[in-house]
Amino acid sequence: MKPIRTERLILRNWQERDRDLFHRINSDDQVMEFFGMRRTRAESDQLFDRLRGNAERDGFGFTAAEIAATGECIGFVGINPTDLEPFMPKDTIEIGWRLAPEFWGKGYVTEAANAWLEFCFDQLGLEEVVSFAVWNNDRSTSVMKRIGMRNEPARNFDHPRVPEANAHLKHHVFYSLARNEWLERKKAAN
Image (cartoon, rainbow, N blue to C red; front, side, top):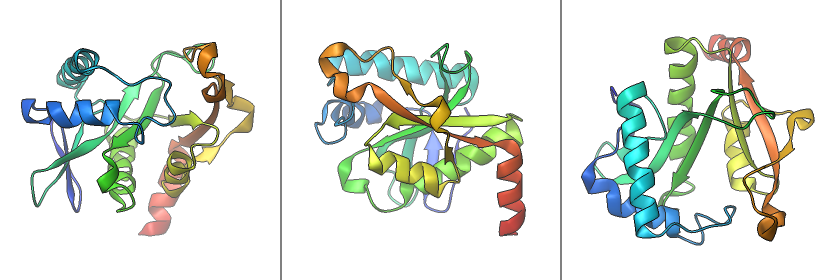
């Protein structure tokens, strides 16, 4: 994949040097608060390899976010096809993120997500980008709102892959941004 540069970040494919950070964010209780699992090192490495391969193949994915000035990987911000039928059609593009806690609250996710939205609408020509989170995950839904997405209550759903043992994490709120909304927002900013 071709890296995307923002004011402070480089959005790029995963590199071997990122593997430890990737495991840390996928096993950290604070980062994974709204997920019913923590990944072991082996599970994290398997996901790392899959995401890296997907980005090589597709030119995008849930890819690494690096601070341009320091070269430090802070987590991921990216886009990925979803597979959650019947709640959304196969290959609907989802935008998502996961950063190490020491990088929260600095605007990195918003900055990177806006760059990915531009890629989605200008490069891929998508008509819609979606995001979803556990209903009370205010950190994530706040980002969704900041990047111009809107909640569509009629499309909220109970996530089919969340086990009953974690029933409090099943209900998800659905946000979307349509191409025409993105273009209007972009025009208003100029």
